Length: 308
Ligand SMILES: [Zn+2]
Image (cartoon, rainbow, N blue to C red; front, side, top):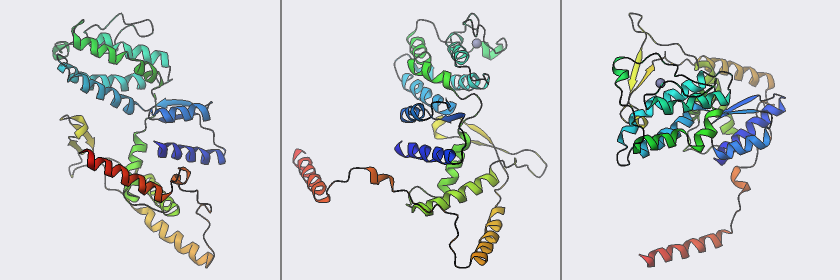
């Protein structure tokens, strides 16, 4: 995560230089990031992205469902994830206590109890359950599966994370931007600072032009959707809107601009790149003497050979 923290530091430095105050920040819930924000941005409200918190819980549920008599737990993954999104989205003022009250009501819900939860959130918000919904396989109070699930819903981790869920903004757009960056600057290739800088700019320009593409339609005018089976959903499917093809209008603007600056400045360098190149991140690490490091490596290798 050191890279992520460095990126955050640099981005916030940029905002500071441009005299922009950060009122609210939404990140994943890495401890290092939490600590850094607490120490460096004391006046900024820090929220967690729901997807990241839900992902952590889902992993725990899947693990627990492998225990004896707990297989039924895995069927609750989707409901709990949906409930978590609802908890955040239905509390637009970000009131942590209300979010926690709403969240812990699900502990009753999974046991088919929908009223009498707590003062802040006494009754489930869903309609009266009917038909298949009513016949759902509820957890039996006192069973091992029920206890495991209650522990996960009311865990210390959840108590810390739920009140900080981001009510309005999620990081999904930034995740989408990251995949655009991967296209322009693949991780397996190493670029110079300025090379990377230019590629990031290209990615940003491409993203901005294409971020809110409209949904594609068929010849008859019907909206297009696609169904996929992502591995992380373990057999479950996702439905996505199909968007129209990306546009590349920016390329001709860039060509025109380049030509204009080249003819205007002739041999003068174009002052659009940062003149100072920050030192590489690894320069802050302790560099051992190469001979010594090789010597250590060889002796470790010998020990391994003899121990087999
Ligand atoms: Zn309920």
